[in-house]
Length: 189
Image (cartoon, rainbow, N blue to C red):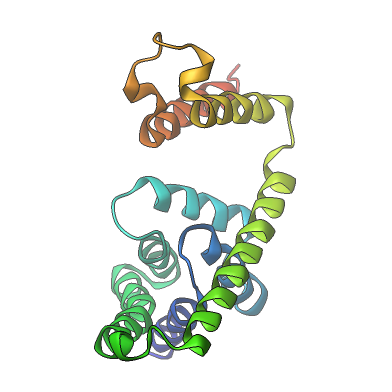
């Protein structure tokens, strides 16, 4: 029972201190799940994060389900998800009730400006860690350059030649996964 409570409380903290979603969750999850709890390695966290990105739903919820399930099974995954969701739902409810009364106040606007800057710093930190961890081989750099060029310059790469679905993030992630599967599979004798 104690482990279930620990999983719930850990993801409650992750949900409470993750602002901005997406990549902003990685430093918080790293601190809580790797540094404090030693439940995962960085490679496992990045694998869970990657799969969480391509699945429907919130990345943090998917990640909490994966980690909880790994630690203690499906019920722990459910508790992790509930722990992650609770702070956000509570904060959104309170903000929705009171934002119209306070949105124009200068200190509220300044607070949101500071939060945006902090989220940007967390995302930059995550990008730096990803670059260090991912680009171990030339193959990974080739996949990165291909996806980057197609996603950032979709009309400038091959104007009129690339169908619109090719520049879709979902398509690029799926193709990259298949290419990675082929390029990195172990050769069998």
